[in-house]
Length: 391
Image (cartoon, rainbow, N blue to C red; front, side):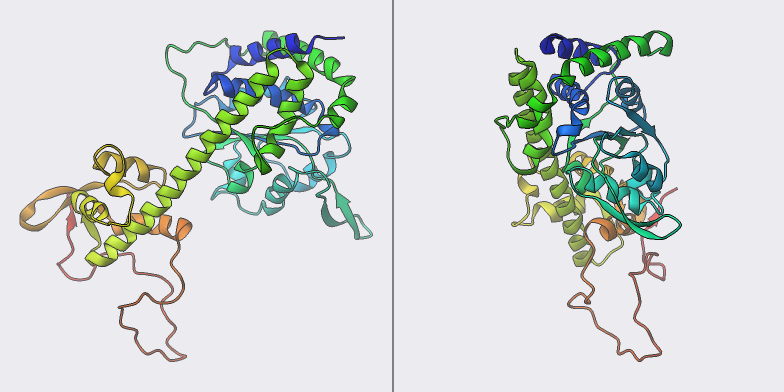
């Protein structure tokens, strides 16, 4: 029988040879996630592996290449139909490897609601999808339970991230060296590790099914990490400690990330309030910062070391695609400023206003033939008063 500790050590070294992961804990997590795919037939939860990064070139696709050669029954896809996925998932499901996942969940997603629903439901066993199928149009139950790794630019939806081991990839530094991935040499090497992994776990499936590991986290995080900790406990050695250390570190990191996301949404709402109170379509950066910091109920006066500054503001808004630019103000003076128009898309997506009119604005009497306006105007105010963008 294979030595589980040695097999996991070998797998961990092989993954680290081809990909730079964000941390040692992340490398441990990926190793255990790969191993868990080989016992997913007895698992109650199928954790997702969310491989996300801010830009291209962060190693996301290379990691999927490595996973393809090491996981159980890989099914790699960039663009597939829900009907295909529904039919390949069965009692012995494949491991779904989805590259460019932003095309499924992002603004380019189109009509992929069924695939999104499948990926959400498949985290837990016994969550089938019901469809009308076949020439006789019969109601048919399709299983959805399957482990899945999803790689894309930017965060995936909360419903996926909340069910995932999250890897936040970064571009590799010049000093960080990895081996070139060449199919002729790399694939046989990785397949050999995969075969040893499968041979070790094949006789332990019943043991894994009965194992109830002690978890350092609770609720959904425990559901997601339990398969990984189970594998570590089966291996023994220092792997149980490694697994629990990785679990705590990475779940805590996501709590911090969630807090940062919530803070950014708060910033969007507060900036909208500043624009409304100032009654302008362009605000100098220094004026926006002054208004934010003066809010006694806001977190901005205590943000960072000396309060929110222009650098912090730019960083917090960058992921929304919002930035400052040069504008010309009174007496021909130029200054960095933010335009209200650049916030409209982010406001609509992340903190939409209630449908009722804002207090303090006069409401014109409308008749049935005069429908209310559907959105705020996005152009500059009429007349020569609005500040002009410098060229």
